[in-house]
Amino acid sequence: MLIGLSKIVEEIDLNSQSKPFPHILFTGPRGSGKTTLSNYIASKTKSQCISVNAPSLDYQKLQSILLTLSKNTILFVDEIHRLHPKVEELLYHPMETRELLLSGMTIKMPQFTLIGATTRPDLITRPLVSRFKIIIQVPRYSVRQLAQMVKNQFKTFSRRDCIQIARAASVPREALNLGYRISMLQRDVPTALKFLNYKEGLSKLERDYMNYVKYESKSVGTLSALLLVPEPSVEDIEERLIHLGLVEIGSRGRKLTTKGLLAVREAVDD
Image 1 (cartoon, rainbow, N blue to C red):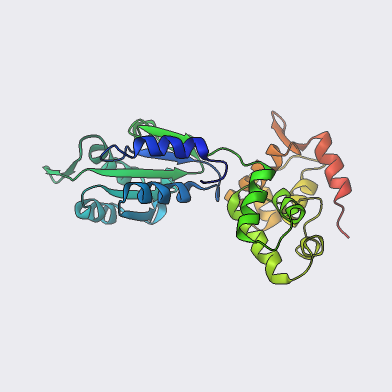
Image 2 (cartoon, one colour; image 1 turned 90 degrees about the horizontal axis):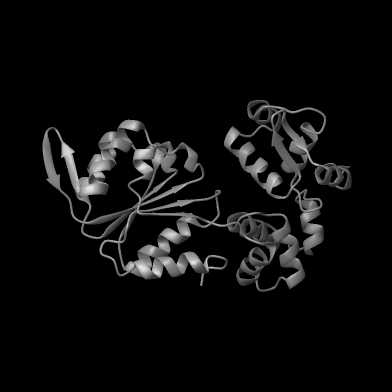
């Protein structure tokens, strides 16, 4: 069973008898399990899965993929909110009628399933969203759930070790990657976390973000330049800090909460 996703898995299992599996959209942060769920659907339905990244898809490439799909194939499109409008429009008829419109011709397609994954559902157009029969938001994971994932992967860690690692992450990919780095350091977990520049469960980037907005609000673009990371990474950092109750965004922009100010004080850098 996928930890923390039992209700989603149950719904997938109930729909797995449908041929083809209904078009489905997964939303959630990077590393939260959207690709894992897509692979689970492919395994459950015994279907071939073709994975593509939306920014790399042009009209000709998508056209070629659609023309070569075989019966009950799954087409997984990651970052689907980044599809070019013309490329996106090419999906409309195949999703709805299993027909591909090319140069005035209508080509009948085999039944297939489109699985979309996105971190920004608000950027997906209404016509595309309406063609997904199932839309599922991957829920946030608790520290306990993340700790169990780490424990399953790294048997030598104690339960307490796993909880410390989980406190420094918000999604499975982060927790498992951090667990791997710590396992390779061959030090006790508190020492390893300190070596990797984590303090009070916060990374150096998260602490820097909080220090930059401590006295005045800054735009995502400004924070991107100050932190030397792309804007989507700033938004990922921000999302976690908001979830932890350390940052809030209001009419006057970003600011630390009272809890955030205390956290900054406790996690002072040397």
